[in-house]
Length: 139
Image (cartoon, rainbow, N blue to C red; front, side, top):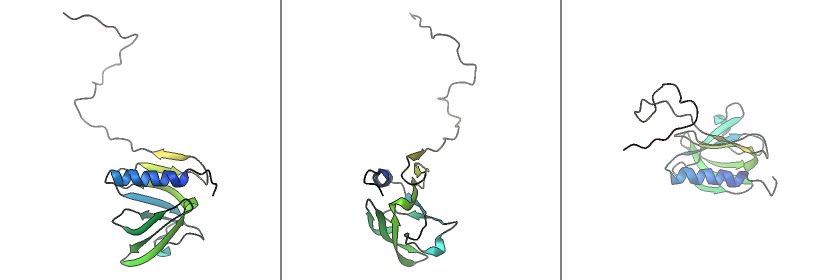
């Protein structure tokens, strides 16, 4: 991995943001020969890991790899994920986070689309005003 890669820093930043906001950080991983995860939980060559403080022990997020121990089906496993294998990190509760598109490429920010509410704060569905805004003095 390049010394100039921002990927490990962005992963740690989203992890910290999740922790600060009481959200559950999930790590999406493309499993390869360097990834150590329980293979029984890998689907289509990928795995999603809950890396919250409550779910793992001894979490180490370095510039080259992420390691911890976690329980799968009640059995403890040592996990080691190369940073290059991380395809995304996001909050379980709202889906916000980052998705990495290919190795050493810029991340994509994932923002959920809010559902339309029936709030009275929204403007009516009438036609939008045309032309320049006009101000007038009200006495």
